[in-house]
Length: 539
Ligand code: GLN
Image (tube, rainbow, N blue to C red):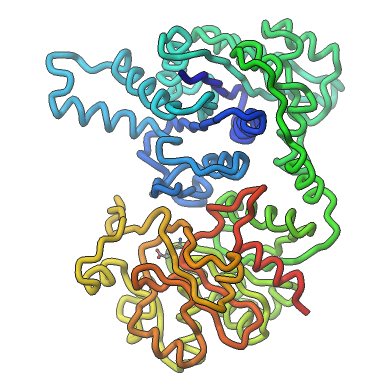
């Protein structure tokens, strides 16, 4: 039977509940426990797949092809473990399944209500996510007091008394503001937030206090007293030099002691040695490398969360600080690639959807190709390498992806559906997107070519597994022409072109998959690691 740790948030959002949950999970994992993670999102969207990156940040894709909240990415990066679609659900999914069951006659005769039906569905889903684990850490999105959070609060309250539940522990993450004029830290917002939780029937057993300054002992005591938790259950969460130091900081405060006591976990002594040495390399690295990051969602850097984290992982393993030079692809269109990318050791063009900034990305690719600067193109950043090569090397005027020009005379990149039509009924695990069109999502195998940068990056592995999220594919009709001119296909999956490289270029790789989704602090993604390494060693 599974034990559950519930993490709720109070006072305001953006307190780092996801990192808190991931850190607790990480410590328990390193203490030998089999830990599962679950993020509950109270919003109505079925998943974040259709939300703008500027609205919601990154959409994280799981191995089994679910489009999930970016916190699932944090969980995977911290716990070094792949989670599946069961690790994230939303109000939209809960209501959809209840309504579907109702239409199918599943509740014949009953009036369908929030309590017990919606709450029951939530409990069922939490238990499903917990199956097979010693402990499930559940992060509840939003803040205590949100209207849409209520059914979830009720569900986790009920689980306290559930016979199928081996134990529950409630953690509440709040903010301790510091009022400069008064020179004082304030506990009142936390007290109110805890009172609100109690009104719903939940008494938190631990307070994680986000604060800019260390909490004096007397303040901690007062907070413990007013929130009715034991003094060793007030854990401070100060701004950290890196998010990966949060588990270490929690460990120094002995966070597992009260949890282990309540959940009867016995002796818990996490082995965090390797983790700690990586954290030290992030905080005080020996070397430095500058990566030009060409993208278009720069107003919200969270849109590239997995990628920026993957660069940090690579840096930690190379004992180097990866400095990101953010370059807006639209600005390249105005000011030229040379001006903006001159000081970069390596150039990375990230994925994206829609026309805006595409020509700037193409200019960045040309600049990296001609000047022999290490280059990594991801998804759209790979598709556009073919477009650039077609236009500037093959001389195919007007070459494009049909995403940007439906009537292009040279569709270097075309719809997956076109590929499937020509492939004689090949089975590809694709998903119908609610926006229309077919999206290729989740993990697929990719066969690597002997002697390629790709195979080298993955330590000689013949088949690698990476995740996807795209609607368009490289058009195989142009393969021969490209290869004859020096752009070689080095990775393929069932006839699909997965990666390309350029002969004679020191390090140039375009990948249709998203390598950033499988990068973890302890096991960085091989293509990103090899790219950062090439940039570090570039003349
Ligand atoms: N827009 C492109 C496609 O749908 C690339 C997507 C991406 O970069 N994730 O295929």
